[in-house]
Length: 509
Image: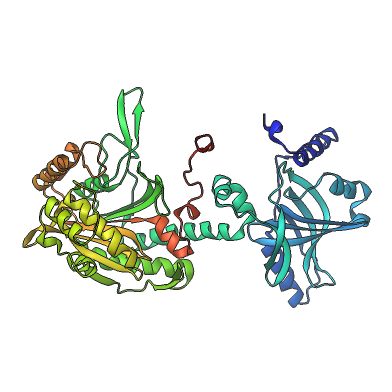
């Protein structure tokens, strides 16, 4: 039972709750009132004060009790709401002995309280609510973490803190309650998604929704999660990408489409990977990867401007300018400059592996050529792409859904965007030849083992859709979580996901 886990202090709070109930006081009333937030109440008073208007500013406020200082026949308190903090003043002459005793006997820090009265300024100059009535809105049986001194708006105040990352991620509700900067991260996240959506809407894209449960996974190189539909007696996959469904919509005549939603990849967890993450993908008929490249840098700069009011950010101690134009580096040249290896001289798995060994590198034996190239990108190019950089023109064998570059069947029109030393986005000129696409699927099926995450299964329905004709198009995908990391200056994806996946406690034990 929940009560069995309570500490001695929490049992004391529980006893107060029971006593309130015995006295006919509901610690969890059905209705609450709030005419103003703390900030709006303070501003309303200050406006009236500047206008020399002495009409009382009557308000009803609601929030979490953060400080309570009984002083005999008066008491001061502070409450927090979504916009900030405000002081409350209680006086026995106005409330009566019984009501003041209720405050002293039943109320603890972290409780939610509703208070009504009028705004005034104390002798010390703080705009405060003169409480004429109050009631409990929710009794907190567990206190928030112990308070420490913090400087807020130039003043030293007592404030609860929670710093252990593991506890913060497991109990995000406490993390949000005691760490105001964490709330700011998720306000940035919401504003980021809103800005991305606004940018694409303004460019005449339409937002759509595609299946999360899919009979065949595809559109990315990743291992899927598998589930089972009991009534249909059918295994299904949580999507790893929106791509193949969104491109079906191009076939149907929706020329500019996008989706923002969750993808799921059964892969490792790291500072930039979570099994469940938020992705934005768009597909744009009659565009190619160069036009998508231009739109991408415009979109990211627009988003930064809307969210932060600027395009220059600081990430991992480095100043980064998101304003266009971004640096563009052809992949072959980038790898050559970084490693001395010209990948075009090594067309087979074995020859590239041997060349890497000559340079003192330690590739995984027997890896396909595409994986070896990905290793070179991850180890030598990605960490050094601090300023926004597009790497473009990728080998065909690691880009099964991209169109060949004219005049060179070994290269496809693909780019990846990197900022702050990590990959942010991926885009192609989309392959729309159904026969070529079928051949690519077959090649990928032969080149990789059945359990290999790079393996792309054959999607016959997608090939059938292409056979009806898909217009030439550019496609794009971006990890929204990583973009939020950049805009909020956070180095771990767990900081920008409200409830990141963690190993179970029983498993850890």
